[in-house]
Image 1: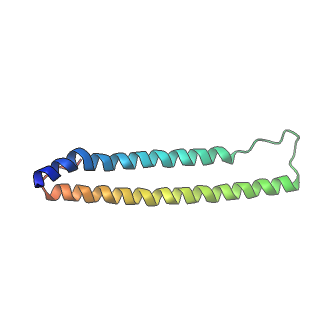
Image 2: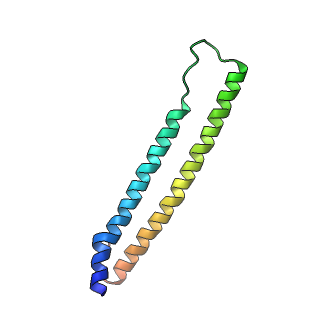
Image 3: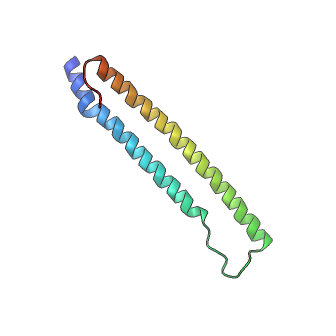
Length: 101
């Protein structure tokens, strides 16, 4: 039973947990990149923006900044959860005599 669990942790559990972290971090980066791409609005081809246009642009920038901060916070929280789960598997693996990767 312990030998089976040991193999399960080494072959499936720990590698899958590491992969989950890698996938999550890639998704976080893609989300931040997409938000960053939205941050640079098209320039006004007609010259200087009106006060209303400038105000609307500033509000969009502020909202986007808040969205980026929230996304980063969510990413960090989920990364912490996934890392904790990986560490739990590694500790279990060590306790039953396998070598956690």
